[in-house]
Amino acid sequence: MIDARGLSCPMPVVMVQNEVKKNAPAELSVMVDNRVAVENITRYATLQHYTVSVAENGEEFTLTLRK
Image (cartoon, rainbow, N blue to C red; front, top):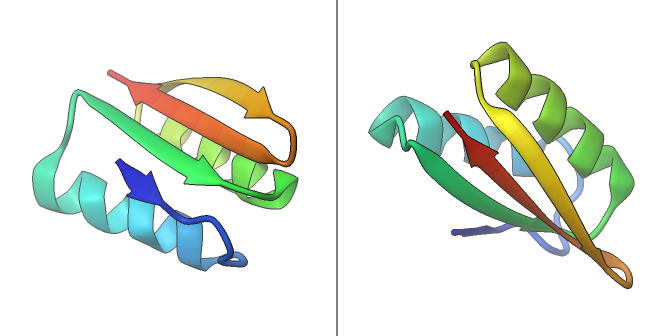
């Protein structure tokens, strides 16, 4: 689980990139609080062959990346 709430891009994407490079997880959850981060993480994850699902809870989003 990566908690990137309160961080502006590119930091949430950098955090996801580091985790993917380090551990190559089959599943990864990421919490963010802005749509730009959702879009950028989704774009990166798709390029890395992950599928992405997004759950919205008010102003917060949980992205689940799965291989």
